[in-house]
Image 1 (spheres, one colour):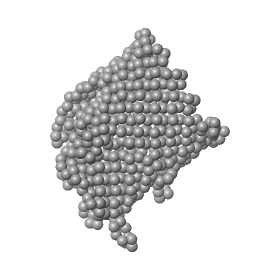
Image 2 (cartoon, rainbow, N blue to C red; image 1 turned 60 degrees about the vertical axis):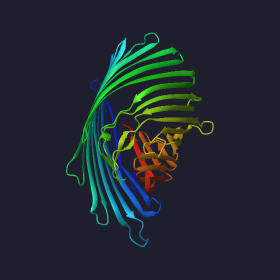
Image 3 (cartoon, one colour; image 1 turned 180 degrees about the vertical axis):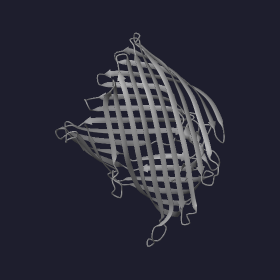
Length: 524
């Protein structure tokens, strides 16, 4: 991939598979350095919308990644065993420089802010999957252990004096252990029962040290969770299958922080599903279920968005969001590669997780009442063979909406979703040249986020991505792709509030120029 300054940052991937002492062994290595670069024009206005500051901003960033995966698998007549492991590191470096644009055009650029961000994530994951197959049942046992160590370091300096600066250092260590055992009985007439148990232990330790503070702010979270689940699949006839299931979940969450917390929670999660084969090439699926989301333990601790200078307090009283959903999906294949897909859903959400006020000046993720969310997606794939051989055109349109009484009183909708979004893709394969090319289109969008003292609305423009790839040379595959062919343009509109009254505005017009990526694969 190419940086804006012309330098090339490589990505290397290697995958090996071979028999080893009666096992099928595979080893994968991946290393890459992904660049990023954008510019922005920022305008700040007071409550009367009078311009009080203008600035230009440049972000130069890179993400270095390394991932090592290994797998051993063995399949016998009566058993299947798989051992998996993954070790990865991701390091993000970002340097943002902001310059004053209120000065006369004859003056040199005047630096007013410099932000350095360095985030590192290390992950180790181990897994065992053991399946026993008998004539009367299938018994599957799984063990998964994950450790994730994150470090966030920010240094923010404001000029001309450079005396107004701040630093932020946070370490976040998470561990998760999952034990799962399930038994699926052989069909009894038209019925196929399944039942099992899952035990989970989650832990997080977060420590924060900010400039001006002498003591480290620690948050420790632990969770023990148990689930008992069972389901029965019923084959009504050749064209209709139904499934009824229920899960009982019980958990205990302990939080040790400036404000300690203990919670014991229990939920019933029923579900019902039915699949109809309406015709040889048409199907209809419907489902109704009650789900309980898993909390992000990071929300129990303090955090910060360094670029927007927005701090977030930890909330030790968080409860999981509950969702009751009904959905339907219809699919019609009117040729081998052409199909129509329609999806509908409606959700009732309880204990919605949104940004809430903790004090007169601070906010956090918290449970903020109940809401409703609904949406529809229409997808169409068309084989263009009558016009162009080996060509496929796909289009998808998604519409979503919600009803929710925001506690800030500024909105009747939920945060973090797109109202309408259009996606299209064209692909043309040229078999005699072992090559293909195509285009991908992302529609424009608007996405709002509501904070207690701020509303952020992000707009994105229509964008194009193109690619061309070839396997014409024996054992080699080459792919060249360009993202943001027409330049990505994103507008971030921030409206600030004090005591529910507008106190100011900020608009940032960000520009992402085209990204170029050349990939080469060799099979040996």
